[in-house]
Every structure is written in C-alpha cells, then in structure tokens.
Image 1 (cartoon, one colour):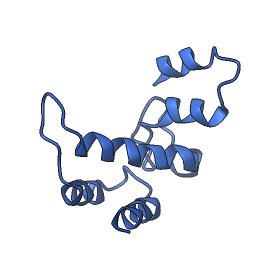
Image 2: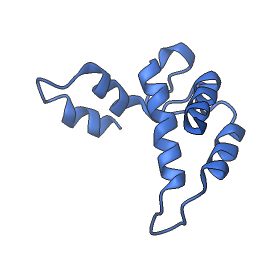
Image 3: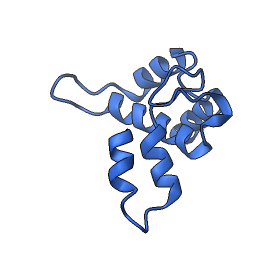
Image 4: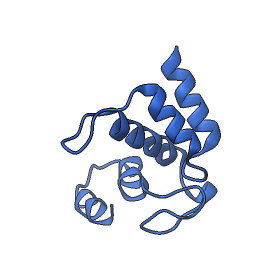
Length: 99
C-alpha cells in the first residue's frame, strides 16, 4: 500500500480520498492492519468502505488459485472476521447487495 501511495501521490491531480484508500485499505478497526496499524476512527469512512469492497471482490472473484465464493459464503466469512471490518458498514453493505 505504501508503494502504491508513493506512486499515486506524484500525480498533482490525485484526490486525497484516492490516496487515503490506496495507503490504508489494509488497516483494520481493531488496529491489527498495515501499514500504520491505524484503529477505529483513525481510519476514514471511505477507507473502511473500500476495504469491505476489496475483500468482498477478492472472495467472490475467480482466481487462478481458487474458485469464486458465492455472495452468501462471502457474507458469512466476512461477518465472522471480528475486528477486521466496521460492523455497521458491513451490515449496510450486505443490505445494499440484497436489494
């Protein structure tokens, strides 16, 4: 994430939100993420949303090393990952998918 941030930050017109997401999308509300070990409200709402989307996409996409999971499998797995996601945002994410 830091390398991506460094590369993108060279662009003069790169929005701050994009840089924030790039650098911090592996941070976790429980502080066990990286690269800076941010926790809770230190992680912006756009980053918290992007991290949910990133993991959901990774789980539900076919990869050379794994089959795509169903949305239900991804939801069950993500809900079980205590401290990795913003709980209320995760619930809202899955509510939006079911509409």
